[in-house]
Length: 112
Picture 1 (cartoon, one colour):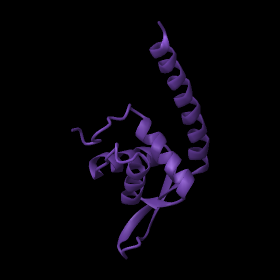
Picture 2 (cartoon, one colour; picture 1 turned 30 degrees about the vertical axis):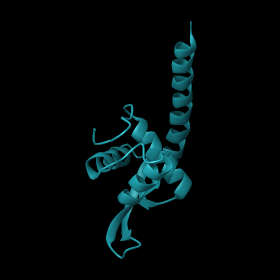
Picture 3 (spheres, one colour; picture 1 turned 45 degrees about the vertical axis):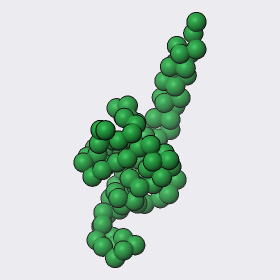
Picture 4 (cartoon, helix red, strand yellow; picture 1 turned 180 degrees about the vertical axis):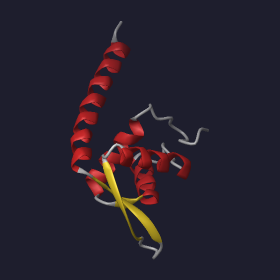
């Protein structure tokens, strides 16, 4: 199994999932984000630190998320990530792109 586990994600899909999760839940630390994505996927996607944290750095470098240090539920110091205004705009674009790709793939799969 890959480090993404049971389901390999298409390039860029993890970014979409992180942006959507932050949009839905508000600020989260990396471990919490990974666990929530796994939970929502029915554990078909398993994320480790080597997968989630590079995505968070990439998204922060692009200005789509911001971060600040805080304290987690188990009283540990953790970096909390939040969606920025640019991230909200990008999320809308990513969702529209994903729907276009899904429609294209479905059209090809259904063709006889």
